[in-house]
Length: 392
Image (tube, rainbow, N blue to C red; front, side, top):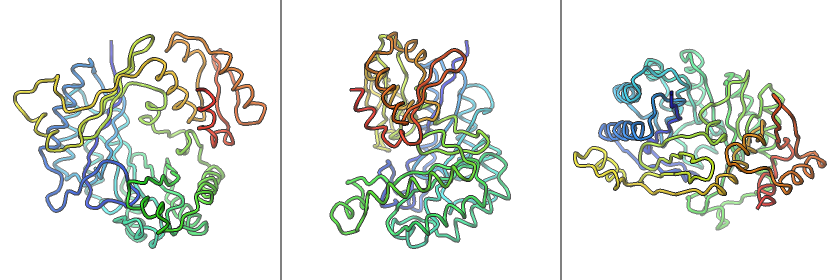
């Protein structure tokens, strides 16, 4: 029987780090991404495919860091190796993240020849002052050059990331940026509200009042952006994700639908769900890149000593995550799927909570193929955390 799972690969290298970023990344400098890291990732992916009986990739997502720093030979080596792991050509949705400054015709051709079907480009803002403030490598000019190159030479799906309410952004500049982006007709847009993390340089300045920041205004600007995209033909199919013509990101849907996925690379996380009465296993690889490479390139591996942290998730926690992830989507969650997955019925508390939220216009209930679904409305999804707290 075919056993297909999604694969996430982390490329934790950047030329410079944005001041708001709390993802794991390290500077690669002039040396570029080491070939040994690519080899280690392929070794790990082969091992994880074997122990989980994986015979095909449902989706592949290459994130970072800055995966677009990969050279053309490395792109070929990585994707050829991933195909060889499962003994087939890559025919699934295959996404790679890109910085606008790295986009050129030759690199796009290398991606396409390697089997990449979906490009995710981190725009974030079209405002030069904003980009400089958060130390983005890109500028408005380089962004427009990249988008023009994609429009001319890229034949796959194209997604763009934007962040609302970065310091220095105004409603006018943000609206102008969205307008500029839509001129290039991306298939998919991820619109994120800035998450201010205390451990980041930007977070330190905001929380110490060195940079003025209005969190209420930031929330309002994100809502403005959401409404703007919805009014221009984009479907909000998940809290922060919008698409045209049904072109959703299948890889991200795997996360939201609690499907199995594995993570390869330093700092990557994967989860294999246990189902009824069984523990789920979530593994997060070490962030020590040298230790990661040394282990997977070593000749004397002891697989009980993989440099990773293992978390065992109880069925009760997995059941809560079912709501936490599923209610982020416009489709919501299915009662029958919940009962089949966890072997427990919807409690009266859950049913009453949905009924109460339906009365206030924050939830809808609907049937599809004799199955019962519950979803938060555009109004309700703004209060997702409140709903989840009520479940506890």
